Image 1 (cartoon, rainbow, N blue to C red):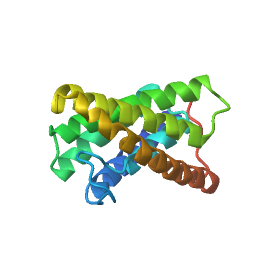
Image 2 (cartoon, helix red, strand yellow):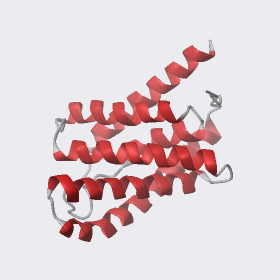
Image 3 (cartoon, rainbow, N blue to C red):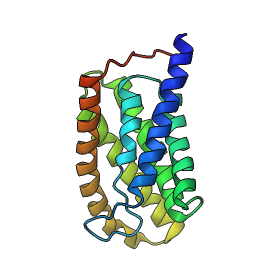
Length: 172
């Protein structure tokens, strides 16, 4: 029974993350930054980390939300897809490892770590493989700025969910 609940929970988080990914592809940013996204689809990843579904399952959610969301939004295999995939994997790994190592870290702290690693991975992928220029580094502060804001919003959403809904802890 516990395994069925865990699989269902992971499926729900994956579907939620994919849907938010799709919807946010239509949300304009207040500043024109090519390839930048809001990052709200990372709140289900954060929720999976703080409810301790495990690193592997959080990675599954990150990869599947990027695959499904990009297929739905028509961006599959585009440069934005590769940046999003790299950022999602980096974020999922960083948040999961941070959560395991720093038991006293807040939801906000874990979220900010995820945003930092996501933005760093996306900038590296863009600079090394897409635009192939060191000049992309000038976008990095803007991405970090928006990442801090989005991480705050994502942590507020997750904190509200955790206060409002009883979510079982899943142990590997």
